[in-house]
Amino acid sequence: MKLLVRNLARTTTEQELKAIFADFGRVQSCDLVLDKATGKSKGFAFVEMPKVGEAKVAIQKLNNKDIAGNKIRVKKAEDKVATPSRVSKDVEK
Image (cartoon, rainbow, N blue to C red; front, side):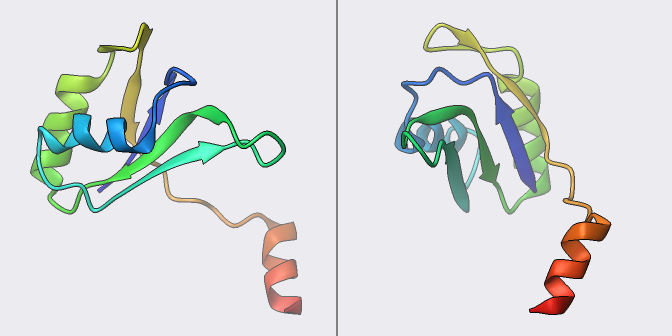
């Protein structure tokens, strides 16, 4: 299950985030979203946990938890819906 983690402190690293979620089960991937221009964190990330039960427990335990001075928000990531402009660009390729 892919999770969206928001309101992260800009100082939180992928390694720290992975360790936090690893307390609740196996973490398949952890992707901290970085600003392309500055290379600094944008304050959110995606964490993927292969076992749905473990992911649900992580959501329950970590949503609104204070991490590095910020109350993080954790929820199931929504599937990306293709917009008409995106679909046409993909077709042109």
